[in-house]
Amino acid sequence: MSGKLLKSGLIVSVMTLISRVLGLVRDVVVARLMGDGAAADVFFFANKIPNFLRRLFAEGAFAQAFIPVLTEVNQQQDEAELKAFIAKVSGTLGAIVFVVAILGVVGSPVVTALFGTGWFIAWLEGDEAGSKFELASTMLKITFPYIAFISLTGLAGAVLNTLNKFAVAAFTPVLLNVCIIACAYGLTPYIAQPAFALAWGVFIGGIVQLAFQLPFLYRAGVLVKPKWGWRDPGVVKVRTLMIPALFGVSVGQINLLLDTLIASFLTTGSISWLYYSDRLLEFPLGLFGIAIATVILPTLSRNHVANNPQAFSGNMDWAIRMVCVLGIPAAVGLAFMAEPILTVIFQRGAFSEQTAKMASYSLIAYSFGLISFMLVKVLAPGFYSRQDTKTPVKFGIWCMAANMVFNLIFAIPYGYIGLAIATSLSATLNAGLLYVTLHRKGVYRAKPETVGFVLKIILASVAMAAVIQYFNLGDKFYALSLVKQIEHVSMTIGAAVSAFVLLLLVFGVRLRHFKAIGG
Image (tube, rainbow, N blue to C red):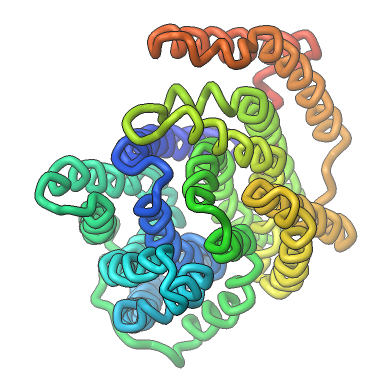
């Protein structure tokens, strides 16, 4: 199992890497077109709301509730029962999300007023910023249907992941990025407002992603005709687990949405600065944290169904080690190289030097929460695989409340940077609560070897930070040409990674430490 788990993790990471690279290309295109102006704020707002719902319906609460039940059905029932279960879940989920999409399109002004309250108040008062409210209301009518298509895409991906076919679902987001980039270049010359071209890219991307996965479901023999099954025992079990999981697994996304609401009251550019910094944070989070979480949930579910606590604990240890060895140095790199990285990736067209500076501040604040975001991704499956969604929801509510308190404490003096600080702190609180509870219940306790391994990573990361600081040019970096900037960033990253790896080798870390202990 250890070899399969590592192989599955690598497959998902490689596919996610392709997606994230194209995602950065997409963001470069967006940054060049719109920078941090009002239209950029509106597009990021209009894209964030359906993405938030996608995390709830598709990647978040639904997946965490659906995969353990699907694993149980797959191992304990015959093929006919498995197909019937998938048919009823897909029919029920599909009907719900399409209704939600229609309501979102019709009620887009209400949604905009709810989550962009600052713009709505400006519109009521006849302020110039009120134009953002009108633009966002119109744009949401284009982006909101994305929730329906991507939710069904998420369901298809969950089925394939449970069948150990991880590559398809991990590659699928590439198609969304391709669609947005294609529309940015293909439609912009014909549309007065470039943000609408990007919105249509989101809409088309949802359809394309769903269509891409259907042949793979057919080949796996699980492409079935959807049926309504609200009262079906399997569906009841999934929705019973899902309701509390809506909070537990999506705390980070809900916090980001609350940040958007508060940012609508702040100066123009705040939403964009948070977006660009969040996008860079999402790169290692998706590449490492989400990739590991994707393969660990079905594995832990199988361990639980087989009543194998030793394998369960061993696989949890593996997940913790993997996110730490990848997440801690990534957080250090983002914190100490925020401005140079943002400059090299985004600074062209409407994205100015000032935009890079402003976005770097929130990226630094976000980076300190990166390892916590990752740990939540792998600790929460420790509950969901056991079909326990009530415990994470309790912590989710606590952390949402804490995030609002942190927002009040830090956003008033530090503006949008305070919002990033609050998000990182609430994620850290969430990760701590999840681990302590797993430990107290005797479900999972980190082995001494794992604790020692993490300490070695921290020491190596400190040395890595010292190397980055040694190569720091400060404001002289902006005087370099783009080619020289890329060379300098590449050289700094290369030296830092080399120092990190060398110290790990000196500390005795070897390949065997990256293999799962459990079965």
